[in-house]
Length: 343
Image (cartoon, rainbow, N blue to C red; front, side):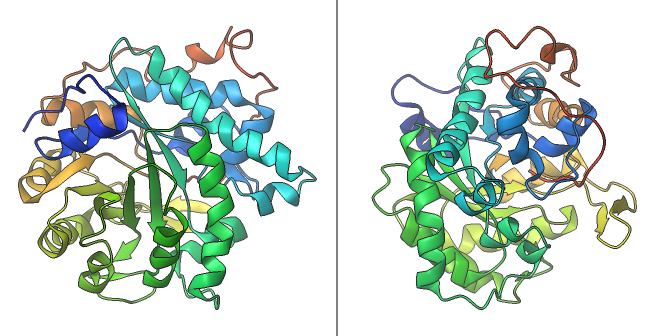
């Protein structure tokens, strides 16, 4: 299995064409790379706070993944919402600008690659905005229509910024997936739908067959799969997603470590094995990468395992990239410290 070399034409269309043939390498966890660069993410907005206060750090993190060989960069908009920014006194116009900035930062990092790199705008679940771990439970007590109303304005703001694809990611619940698919109708972009799962069920407890069937026959969905799950849960999920939908499968699990919310730290050892990616691709995976605690070194290993078209570069921690960037980025002071890791 080799990685796709994006063809000429519109990037979004080329990505869909590529997934029908071969594997495309995603990036890894954005927040763990930001932490490696010294950023403080112990905030309800997580990495989204840096869209306002340290955008050059976000661009540097994206650049680290480009150098590792990533062919798709996922934006820092997972936790970025009108409601979350509103609690910080940022109005709707300002929030829309920050959402657009997330796309521009990824696009700028992609532009320095010397090769084609796609940009996926992250659309996280409603629970991420609550910042209380609800995205790992789902079942918010909201109707599908109410969830659609929540998601649509952010989808519209991100789509207007011109990414190549929307990543509907870390979705814990079939009801929310249905709402998100309604919210993206008419946005003019393809999407991938990626559930957060535990074993053979969504985090809300629905069977994977039921969850993936929602995307079957949905023309706007170019890939369906799982992310931010234990690597051990990927094998079955890939088979079920491919068999249920006939679509290319997207997989980007976390490191296998467990977040202890009481102690506010990661526990256990990493179990992400890049060599497993070959089996995932044999089963139907076409978008492959990592989520929480999966960094540039692991992405570079994925590139080697799957015969990536881009060689991993040096300085994968991205620390050097943050220096001297402020003249060409939308600057702001860099934060320091530690915090919870997520996209």
